[in-house]
Length: 308
Image (cartoon, rainbow, N blue to C red; front, side, top):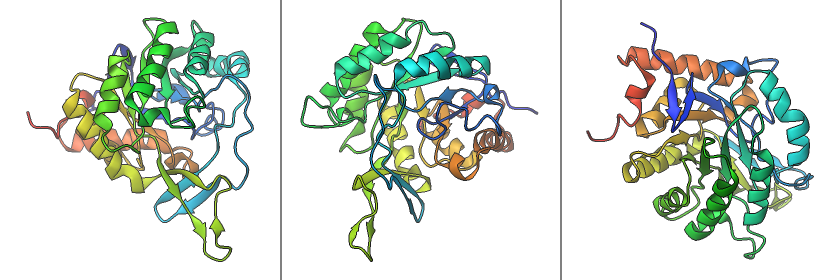
């Protein structure tokens, strides 16, 4: 029996539960030769800022035994170029487009969100709050519940009421629940978790950091247990809040683990670097894993690991 794979992120209805993850598939064009983008739950774009950015110096990426470090520095062409060229292309493909927005200040986040308002094809915003706050000595918004809440409130205020706003949380905090609660209190309709963990690699021959930016975000299978833990904790504290889970998903059973912890849908990131067809493959594997365990509907598995 085929499993009903439809799901929801709040008011956003998705025909399938697997999406791309921000930062790992550009604006979708890179995956198009390998994947029918419209068959996925959605495409989450790389983070968009107000103006073009060249990103950090190279080298920007380093392999680790169970994942990779990246220090891209939010390279991008800026929101005007995205609205003029990339978003229309995604819309032509029939994608459900979730745009990741970023900024160095609350005002920049809000300005980017305002420029995206009313754009065809946009179905939700994902707010990347793991950016340094230039007005607070570079402290990362996501590490301070009050700062995270101000960003979410600023974006929510200028976003159409029928467009969900998801706050993307960082695991680099002592307790992720207060940050989640602050974001929801500020108007987030759902939460994305987790972003990368801050890491570092050193070349033992040169005795220098491998990345030009010194530190970078660790992603890949090493972080999946952290993602499961964070999703579990937030789901237990906020049982009604939609969660888009991500972190080290390579196979359908990996995605199922996040779903059982409380994710209503799953984004796939690092896996696409080695397998551009990872998203539809994982989506098919997830359906098989659900069927093998007797689930008739994807939604029946959401939070199933929690006490009932």
